[in-house]
Length: 445
Image (cartoon, rainbow, N blue to C red; front, side, top):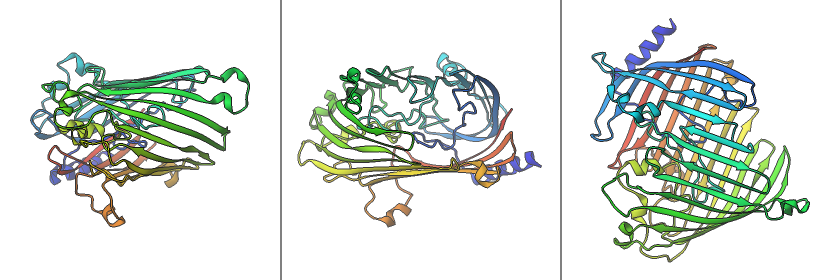
């Protein structure tokens, strides 16, 4: 009966002619496998996950989309703080032939690494190799919410993250794709009076950051089109405990554009500034920030939309203004809640005056339910992100290139199986909204 239901769902997918395509960069991942070894403090653990289903794979060179039957295995192993997960998959065409291009190059084998991680974010030493989601450098003024999984499963990239905090100093860094290293950056910081013993001031930190993309339009034939953003920041934790915390911070950054853009009239060396307060209140994580930037500067340049824009063959740096005036000013607000570990929900809001790229106002919302909320039988997740929102009515107008939407619902016939339906919308190189669907059966042992 369980297998029959899965087959029926897959036949419905084929009959509808639906296509599956994945976007990433979410705080709450939608549509991707969920690691089982989520607790790095466990002494050891092992599991075998997998799924069968139907996926539509788009060839990035031709743009042609073809539906494949999919069989995947996701073995995982954890030992103390070390965790390893593989993503081993086979795609079969309508004739039952395996798609060979997933296995015929050395980089294809590298892409089978789902993750290799040490510890978890926030620990004194954290490292990860593989798929990256929600990568934020510093306070997110330069990079926030970045993901290298935006085109999963069409494109599987293997990146890396590293962060350590020794108390008096620390650092964090990332590479979006180890094969070409195009998007990479990091931050180093010091706490200059850490050893003073002063209750609050000893935690004052001063940092510098840099993130760059050597190939921001995805076209290797274009020279001198690199984009880099450099910044400095300061932060002062006011108070911190398990129930409530607050931190003051300030950021300043500058964009450095390649000759490709400046020859076309884009003004170089745009500056941006931000300051605010972030913290925790019981089950809420919150942030309130004010930004002031030149018209040729984009805050959070490397964001959740970044790889979508980049893979479309264009790049937002080309749309920057030819002047640094008038300045753009506006707020950024963020609230996330974890309600009894049953519901995780939250969102962000950004607005700017004098918007040359027509990005703002920008809203984002996301939510995930735990299976225990509905007797262990159903869980669901959804994300919604929309740029250029002028009024509440526009939030419902989703068929446009300013909206990225994802929804997932999973039924649990038993403890080891999930039947999953994933619906997503991104947009293609021509700005046309692309709505896609995937059905699969996840199994874990």
